[in-house]
Image (cartoon, rainbow, N blue to C red; front, top):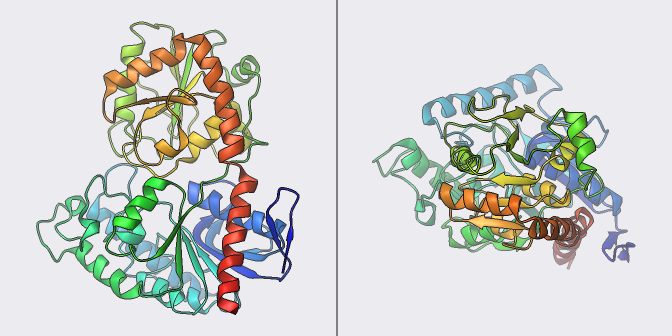
Amino acid sequence: MTDMCSDGSLSATNSTRVVHLCTSSGISGGGAARASYRIHRSLRERGFQSTVLTLSSTSDEPDVHLIGRTTTTERLRGKVGEQFEALVLKYVRPSSGNYWTSGLVGPLLVHEHPDVTSADAIMLYWLGAGFLSTAHIGKILRLGKPVIWRLSDMWAFTGGCHYTEGCERYRERCGCCPQLQSSQRMDLSWLGWQRKHLAWRTSALTVVCPSTWMADCVSRSSLLSSVDVRVIHTGVDASVYRPLDRLLARNLLGLPPDAPVVLMGADGLSYSGGRKGAVHALEAIRRVREKIPDLHLAVFGTSRIPQDIPGTAFGTVQNDRLMALIYASADAFVSTSLEDNLPNTLLEALACGIPIVAFAIGGVLDAVRDGYTGLLAAPRDSLALASQIERCLLDKEQHRAMAENARNDALSRFNLSRQGAQYAALLEELCSRRRV
């Protein structure tokens, strides 16, 4: 049985038990960690008996349970998985901003945990760092319970990489992996694909993609093309991420009050290359400064600023309110990701009423409406990106309209309550189908 919430969404009154499995979960951390926590809290607000099972968390709430910490055996098991995947990373050496997870070792018996065995439905998120092996994910899929896997990246349907960097061998059987610099058909990626091909055989799985681009990748993959796929956009907390007084924000952050401020940032931002494409952003900003010499660059995710560009680096920021203040100080947010799902940074910038200038790739196309909430440029084209940054900063009338549209778009399309309602409805659908 269900009741209606004030926002028109379903509220569970049947004590449906849901467990969320994620390597990390909490109000701060990476996108998957925050997503799992926000969805969990939203489901609890809608009457679900929701718990989180994770290796680490920034939340000390009683319904967020840490695994691998209780006994000496558990701690040793957890360490083995973590250290093994760390060795794999040293062997693979993925590009900056990318990861590789073998899924070969995951000693924690998560599928036997009481939170899992007693659940009516299971939700999976980012499962790397030795939290769950491919074999153990397969055991969870075969428990006979509905399983929803929210894909933060591409790992679920590749031989081991989290982003393919343009490689499309995941549409076949992987092997000859460019990230492994391998010319061998039966390499580590081929082994990863084979293990997943055996483990993913189930009718219990529903895949949720935050972006239509990710859903398209899933539909073209050899591992998950037959699975039920849904698109549910990530939600942003618009009560925290909201427009603030720009001058006040700059005064509090020590930024120049009158200069145009361009903001860029990502977890582990690197200027030397990689999937986030910061090298293209810097090249574009150097070009823009030829016409707008007082431009000031603000960055987060790194503590370094290039010596030839005046700027401020905020380092790693894990406080949402401080992050909202940083967005509010900017005239534009620049994203140069070369391959990405639906970045939280874009949704947060939109909610703060900040126009976005970005490369037209992947999930960015879901977030940014060209000419309406921001401006898009062809991928890797630093000259076109520079032109769009100039246009955003110099066309005051369009800037004002895009800023207003950005906030409205965040409220209507990327609303946190809407996301929670969609997951609640999906869980109710899947659990009802099982009860029939």
